[in-house]
Length: 566
Image (tube, rainbow, N blue to C red; front, top):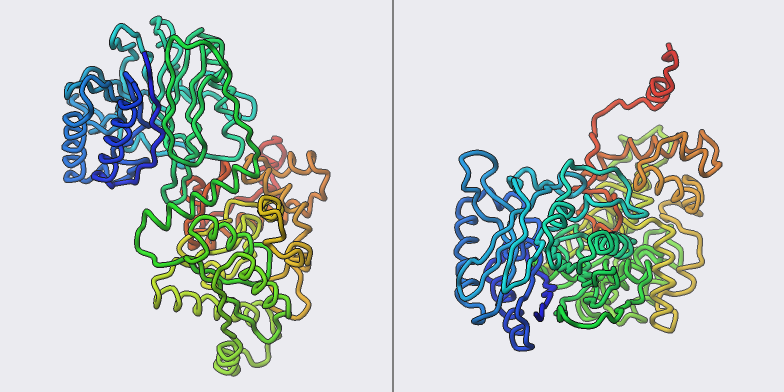
């Protein structure tokens, strides 16, 4: 049997566009001799459709779309698609997350998803009823252990995959006991740094445990915050990867069940994957929303705005990117010259708009109210907010998508100005720690073979430039220190004691950083959606109360069974 994996990029809610894409790829697969073509999880609706699934009209339209696909796929071609379907039982949630096998307009088999994730970005139990049984389907004499995304993730904890088993049921093990000829998994598995290696190790383990080939068809593309890398693959019974799809782009991969085992390997780098994921995230946000004319961002001469601009240029082309440098009276010469050099290197438009008149006007307006007080953050932040107003005005006037440039380190500790540099429609670097931003800058220049991002931008000390001679290290520890703390606290969910023992940093320093993270949730909640590239990003996958009184000292005392402080 010749099987094709159709790694497609569906758009959430675009039933007509997704239908056309599915039929197009089905015809391509048939034209190249496929007997069966496999599509990703919920490819009919796009993933995740969220509360669209509560709309009765949408659910009816989904069923009509499924029926249309079934009638129009090529004759004698088996087509496996993912879609929400009604739960016919008199109890439970109204829908199942299903894999549907069609041939010649007829539904030959249906398998419902068993494991419905509710952690991080996932909320499937809100909409779907889990399958009550696991069964092997038979088609054209081949016994298929068909299952959906999460169903494969309760098998074995690969190295680097944190957490314990979440479910009592192991769908893959149950299918394996029913003697399938091969496993097929329909997925919408999000990208995060290092996910390729985790998937690889997991699938190899399943193959070796059950001595059966494994086919994984994963969604590609980005939907708001969440990025899908594709990374579809086929492994032989001994775990050897024998076919592999491109990452971060649509692809069609073929495999013959009787083919000899020949390894298919791909060269991957974490920083390259991170770069490509962010480019895809920008491109799909811009194109799938369909409401913006160009992308717009402030250029400060700093590393964050430079990297954001380079990523946007790679995603949209230089003709669709506009940079704006907005000096104030205290801005350094490099904030303008480095911005202009960057724009020239990238071939993007660069405008200069001085915010000095706006800052002067606010100083005059607030002079009486601020009389007798020492100048401080309030005065400094007027500059950032003047820039924010300027950028939003340009965005409104010309239908430009404003890209926010703040990084994860700054967002974590609140080193951002609400209604200033947090303004925008998409936060490109909000899940990228500052040290990784520098890695991206070096990678961009290496790939270009020249200093696209000016060397001065990379080498000069980072600064918000809201007062004379200001440097980030006036307020924050060096970013190498800060990021080591933040990665453990936010991404690895470690607490004070563990962080101090692992890093050797001063306990007071670590405690202060964790307090800053906790106290600035209100700022993050009001910031634009950010592209998710780690296992724990700010946004829909991290739900921390704004109003809370979590006392770390009390928690430590309770954990250690000590007397509480009086």
